[in-house]
Each structure stands twice: as C-alpha cells, then as structure tokens.
Image (cartoon, rainbow, N blue to C red; front, side):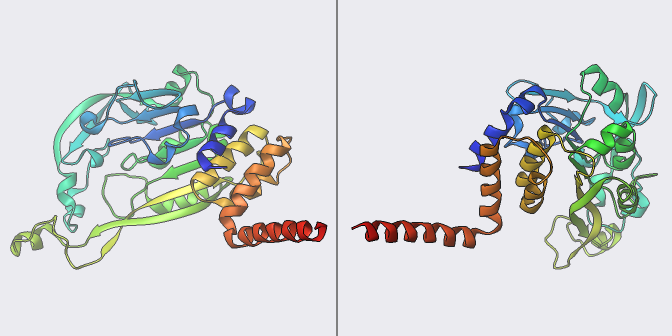
Length: 315
C-alpha cells in the first residue's frame, strides 16, 4: 500500500479520530513546518510568529483539520506586553536583542540589524493552550530565535514528557543577549525520556563585515570558504519508556515513518497493545520493505517461484 494511503488509514482509526494529532510550531515565518504536509488533513495545528512580515495569519484553506494562527510573542513571561526587535530578515527577529558586536565576524551579520523596536502583546504557551482547549502536544517544534528551551520548559511536566517529537533550533555562536544555547538544550533533554534522532549543524561564512567592506566584497557572494557552525537543528523522539497506548503507538509509527526512522517505527509496534492485527501487519510490512528492500524482493521472487513449481507439479 502507498504511504499516503497507509497514513490515511492510521489517522482515521477510532483512536486518532477521537484524539487527533496536535502539532505546535513556534516561529512559523515563511511557512508552517513542511514535514507536516502528509498529516495535516487530520491534525490540529497551533502556529506562532511575532513578525507578521512573512507570516500568513489567515486560517482559511490551510489544509489542516483545525488551525490556530497566532501573530504574537509567545514566551515564558507573565507580562501582557514585551519588546520585540524587528531585524532586516523576518527570520532573525526576536524578543532578545541581537549581539551585533559579536555578529560582526560573520557574513550574515546584516540580517540581524535591528530596523525597529516595537511593543507587542505577549502570550504564554499555557494560556494559549488553555484558551484553545488543547491539553496535549504530539509534535513540538520551535525556532524562536534564542528562547527554545525556556518555551519548552514553560510547559507542564506532563506535556514536556509526553510529546512524541520535540524539535529545537538553538544557537551555537553568540547571536542574542541571554539566549538559550545549543549545549543547554542537550543537557536538559539528556534528563528527559527522549533520544536524539538527528542533529544538523547549520552555519555561515566566517568573514567579518569590516573585511567585506575593505575588499569591496558582497556578503551574498558564494565565497570559496566553508560554512562554520552557528546553530543546530535537533530532533528528539520520545523513548516510549512510559507510553504504550494504541493511539500513541500508531502516531509514533506515522511520525517515525515521516522522519524516516523506520527502525523506531518497528520498535514501537513491538510494544504491548491491542492494535488490529491486519493494520499492524500492513504497518510492519511497509517498514520492513523500506529497511530491507532487497530481502523483500528476494522473498517475493521466492514466493512466485514456489507457486510456479507447485503449479508445474500439478500438471
């Protein structure tokens, strides 16, 4: 069965119709997380971004079962308003002030140039979730320009420990005043019931603004120098040490398959559950076909060969 049809089959089971996936995206400038396209139709999405210049706040024709688009600052603060720094690039705007003197050494420093400081309404994750009557999160994704860890930590202990996926994009270099750094996220999540499925180190050219100016070089030029490490994208999966409901196991299979973690997808199917055997066999067969396509092909050929031999013997 095709993956799209198989995911559709899983997401329309009784368990997931009664309790659909909840996807939370903090820092949704540009577009809502593209990895959610395959599951959007049956999912509830909550998306935040404070910089409206590259954020479509229209909730119509979203492709989601239900979507809540919130054009506001989300933080761990209780204040009703907070300062927000609009930078040259909407993707670098933050509630934390850019450390321009530190960023001067990097080719992309102009993206962090503050164009305007504004006062915006401030909301907390807890109050938004309460207002929207949402009491669980399945996929937590944040790119908040410096506040990823404190936002995750602002959730209740239950919400933190029971997401199936948690994704962060913390900084490695000094980019914002008082930011949550890469090493802090690693240390915090080490004590949580998660395992890191992937860490992508991203970066920029280490060439200062003054050097660019001196040699009349354009920062957008494809310089023949490598990118250096500036920030990282980290994805964590729940270890399922304390989760074994049919609903969570089925959704973990979907998420694992979407993220191409087919070994993990098979692992969760081995947990104690009462999932329909026919569906279980289909999910298992799909994961095995991806993990070991050569063996599946051999087995298929052998079955055909056996049938032919059996037919010949009957002649």
